[in-house]
Length: 436
Ligand code: UDX
Image (tube, rainbow, N blue to C red; front, side, top):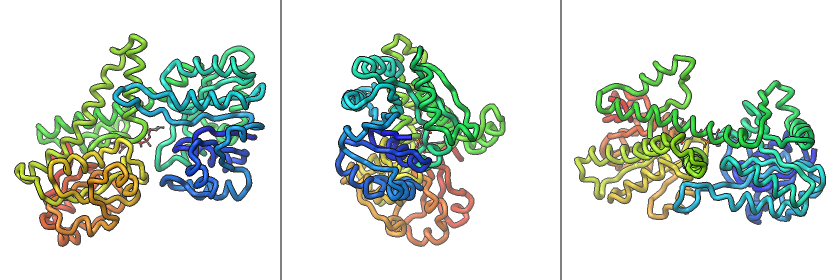
């Protein structure tokens, strides 16, 4: 099938390459000529396991191309809109500028019977508004087809999704839209991937409520970490114990420095803003608490470092292990790790940060920090070590060996990802979050 993907950021680049991998003929469109040139050369503009391989094979097969020219979408039957919906500056609401611009510039190139399939995460009500725009300017239809990919697993999640959601128009357009999406997702559907066929509003809400639920789950366990901290309990054992209840489940119950990234933080804020617009602010008022709990955990890590120096942090060398918002990613958007590094620096600590993939991005936004790609160099002479992204290379550090590098063996495990007894046995003072 011939497809176009408008917007080649995280979501769009992966979607375009994955669709080509599945046998479709795909053109990816982006306004950024540098990004298009990188992708067209078969290179990933960001770190994502498996993406370089499918980009290269897609381009080599001739099924995958990239362009800055919207006219190149002509001939495609389904046009995915995968542009960003960032948080508006100084507000909680989502900025829909890119979505509207993408639809406006796409409309002149649509043919009768084409399908525009929205993938971007949008406030509920957006699809209905855009459907009117598409209908007024063309003979095409609109569907909303949210995406649930996780960074680090984006290729796998796109090729083998755990569910598909179609938000479809009513009337005659329903069948046209459904059969087009069924053809796109033929491989996943043949493997019995669950499919929910619904209306626009439900499809839009599925995405934001899924992210709101995940964020709430993380903040719930981080709230328990706060209680554990004042009672001497151990939040990791608590998570294990409640996680055995199949109704609760252990996943997304890892207490630590909290959630970040390009989705969870901005999506809960945009959801709150949209609910308020709809006169339903109280229904999701708890999401403000979810956000506050989350942000408090960053300060908690900073407080632990400061306390470890009896308040005298100025000039102390602190090695910050981790900058990305989670491992296997170079994404620093709303990253708790980078925030902790910046706060420590702001207090006068001599911060030296390391991360396997995210240094280049962090350097651009936080030039005041010192970085090194060499973990041993970061640790050498450190008065405190703070682990804030649970990369495998940090989890696998040998505490006995690295104790010999630091000035003071004091580690704060902001992701509860180290084995406390191993570190204590090697002479370290170990401090986790929500753990005695
Ligand atoms: C998320 C959703 O999982 C995905 O379905 C959606 O499409 C986009 O948003 P992603 O942003 O890639 O994906 O990250 P995710 O794996 O959900 O992690 C988000 C944050 O929560 C990370 O900072 C992670 O470190 C943190 N986290 C996750 C915890 O602090 N504890 C946990 O138990 C799990």
